[in-house]
Amino acid sequence: MTTATPELLTVPEVMARLKYSRSKVYELIREKRLASITEGRCRRIPVSAVQDYIRTCLEEAA
Image (cartoon, rainbow, N blue to C red; front, side, top):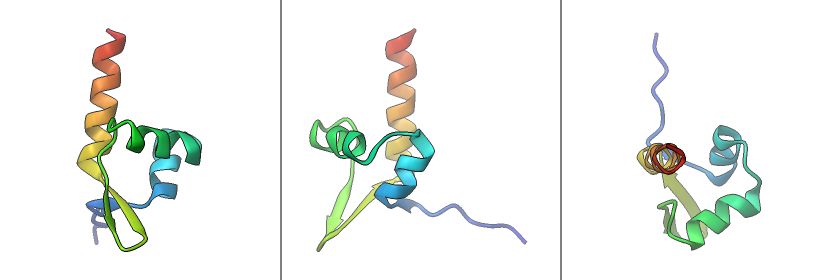
């Protein structure tokens, strides 16, 4: 049995993956460095957006 990775993450899930604070995640969203969608009061971040953010950080560090 395999566990599928969800395509959309909650802010706490992104916080755990990146080891960032809640305010840092929302700052990245405000600065358009981390894409997100909002439906009502629910904010979700696509897994691909987190991967893109990490890739960009690695490229900037090189």
